[in-house]
Amino acid sequence: MDRYKKHFFLSIIAVLLVGLLAACGSGNSEITNASTKSDSSFKTRTYHSENGEIEVPANPKRIAVLAATYAGNLLALGNTPIAVNEYPKTNKFYEGKLDGAEVITVDSLEKLLALEPDLIITYSDDKNVKKYSEIAPTVSLTYEKYSYLEQHIEIGKIIGKEKEAKAWVDEWQEKAKVEKEKVQKVIGKDATAMVFETYGKDIYVYGKNWGRGTEVIYQSLGLKAPEKVNQEVFGPGYKAISSEVIPQYAGDYIFVGDGAATTDNSFMKTDVWKGIPAVQKNNVITFESESFYFNDPISLEKEMEFIVDALTKGK
Picture (spheres, rainbow, N blue to C red):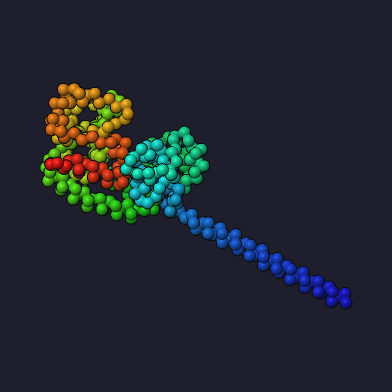
């Protein structure tokens, strides 16, 4: 009897052990599967940056754009950044698209950390680049290195949407041909233009790839630059001048940014200003600086509409 009891209890123990091992095996399988699933949902790829290869998310979802001019490129590609600096928020062309984005300043790294970005994009001269890279993969771009079209394609490469970025560029170039022809029929093929803004008492003339509508005016629509603008401004991108020499840089058309709230436009009351042919012919076009500062697809399309209308309206 004792022998039978012994075998009975050993059988029970064996069954329990098998069940326990099966349960443990099942648990390990679930953990492995969960781990595999987690790994597959965070795939990375290599982006060849200015500073070497960087591993970035294959499909980033939480992107912080701390370079002001790139926020609109992201929006145009269907990605709303979770964080930006203060400047994109003032662009009326975005029509509330950044309302949910947090504003990050150079001194609010803790706030950026709390947002848990999976990718950060900024300028190469941002003093916090190394600190950003400790929070998330960080790509820094040198603004002057890219034309406005190259800029959009590069942002597309960074976030895995190069194909979409190139598609917009192709569409834009086709649209530009049509708008250029429309403008030239009205003002001719040799019309010149100057673009400048005043900040306080400082006056800045802009080149062909420095926002403020310059990409549309000089590149897409083909207006020519006055000789001094071409020689002295196109290279560096911008140049500070005094109000007395504005006539030397003025073209057939003058585009003037309304500048900051502290802008001093008192020079427009002087005889020097009033004596400029473009002023006398009413060919001065004022634009909103805070929105025209940008050269992303969303801003460019709005700028194109405004500039073409201004150059052809009533003519």
